[in-house]
Length: 157
Ligand code: HEC
Ligand code: HEC
Ligand code: HEC
Ligand code: HEC
Image (cartoon, rainbow, N blue to C red; front, side, top):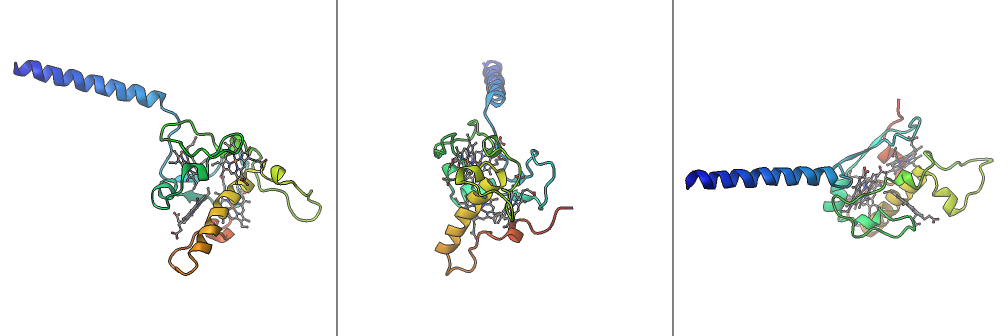
């Protein structure tokens, strides 16, 4: 009797491990708690690389998935779950650089500007940070980075 229930437990355990293993194989994109924002599409980064606290943004700052992730029509993906397939920003905002600026640079429409990866990233991050800072003006301890040097503290060597 005793050995049989032990056997049963052993079988359940083995089945559970297999299911978890297969689940792992077929799961969608996983996300790291902290993402090193060093997109490989860039030939060279001019600025220092930022470590983006993905988990903190979701859990502590209570940012919804759809505030950053959207579909090909810019419809917010509010109902993303751990394990869903998530496309990288660069798959749609596909030009790996800042938008051209300065003398002689062509004036871009909003849509053209957003083709540049760094432009889309900056608009997303800074947009929310600016709103947050405006709302929390009175609280000196609360401040989200909006200046170049706060996110890119030094030039990349
Ligand atoms: C504050 C903005 C923000 C929020 C909120 C956010 N994400 Fe992300 N997420 C990102 C950025 C930026 C990346 C990196 C994408 C890239 O490298 O192109 C990312 C990457 C991911 C990836 C990995 C994609 C890959 O292929 O590497 C997954 C999965 C993901 N997020 C899921 C979620 C889910 C689920 C939620 C909601 C619970 C969520 N994210 C909330 C900004 C955010
Ligand atoms: C599946 C394609 C796709 C992916 C992936 C994608 N975007 Fe977009 N994004 C779009 C489209 C389309 C628009 C609308 C562009 C326009 O106005 O013509 C847009 C617009 C934006 C805007 C402007 C928002 C507004 O409404 O003014 C920002 C900022 C942005 N994306 C940032 C990001 C970031 C950051 C990521 C990655 C976390 C990302 N996008 C991933 C397709 C995508
Ligand atoms: C929907 C709102 C929102 C978006 C979008 C967002 N953030 Fe934030 N971020 C915050 C808030 C809120 C804080 C916390 C400010 C505080 O409490 O002082 C923060 C803080 C930070 C900090 C400093 C603290 C930390 O956790 O490291 C960094 C760096 C940062 N964000 C980077 C980014 C980057 C990079 C992006 C774009 C990929 C981004 N954020 C997009 C809301 C946002
Ligand atoms: C909220 C944080 C944040 C702020 C503020 C910010 N950046 Fe960025 N920047 C990023 C992130 C994240 C990327 C994407 C890097 C990647 O994915 O490879 C980026 C990309 C870039 C790139 C393209 C990659 C490279 O290194 O060549 C340039 C150039 C750049 N930023 C310059 C600036 C300048 C200039 C300012 C101020 C006007 C600024 N950034 C403000 C977070 C920030």
